[in-house]
Structures are given as C-alpha cells and as structure tokens.
Image (cartoon, rainbow, N blue to C red; front, side, top):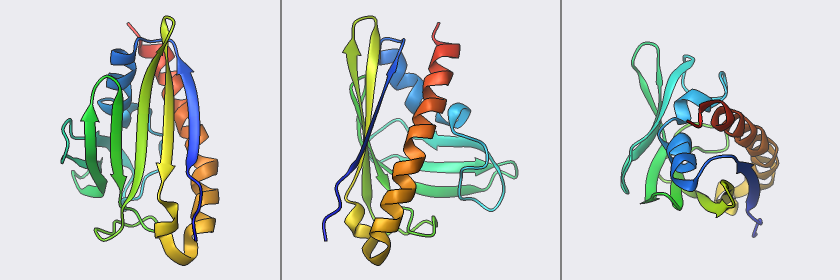
Length: 153
C-alpha cells in the first residue's frame, strides 16, 4: 500500500534564514501546548542543529522523550526530520517516516512547505495516521506562522 504524503504550506513575513531559525531553533516556543507525547507537559521541544542530531521534547522535570532525529540540516533552505513516533505516538527506533520542511524566498517573505512522507510505514494504521497527521499539521503550521509574525525582528 502506498499513501501519498501530507503536504502543507504557509507563507511567513520573514526572510528564509529567519524563518528557518524560528522553525528549527524555536520549535519549543511555538509548538502547541498539550500536543506532545511525554508523560508530563512539555517545556521545550529541541531539534539539535546538525545532521544526525536528536529531536525530542523536555518536560518540567527535565525528562527527555525522543521523537526522532535530524536527517538533513541545510539552513536556510531545508530541514529533514526523521519522525520515529508510531501509531500510538510513542517512540519507536525501528520506525522512520520523514518530515521535510523547505524555506523558499517569496518577495520579502518565505514560503514554508512541510511534507510528511513514507506514511505507509505505519502499516495497518497508515490510513488512520495519515488522517490524524493531515488534520494536525495545518494547525501546527498556523501556530508557527503566528509565532513568526510576533517574533520577526
């Protein structure tokens, strides 16, 4: 079974280098509260700024819950994250779907395109997860765009 990727775009009023920075280095500030997978509410979400880096959340007790890893770190144009959360949103080191985020200059701003692909790797739950993720990513990108509009200086 093949499931098409989820593709969502948002235009932000920031140059691509700033848009990349606010997405990748500030993700914990714009990621919606209560929409993480750890046992306790998150206080930060971290994308380590290098290929091979980790992607994880941190709770108020300092506990880290992994989400995946950084596959490609190419500021200011491209970021590819390895999503390693399974169909019940727990970390699975044997699962890998890809979330690619590109930052393309558009006049004075940037078009940010997110593509979550390889969804068939969720197996029997792939269609259900595609629906959940397809409904979730637009809201997350809206949160990001709001954060950019408030923090682009």
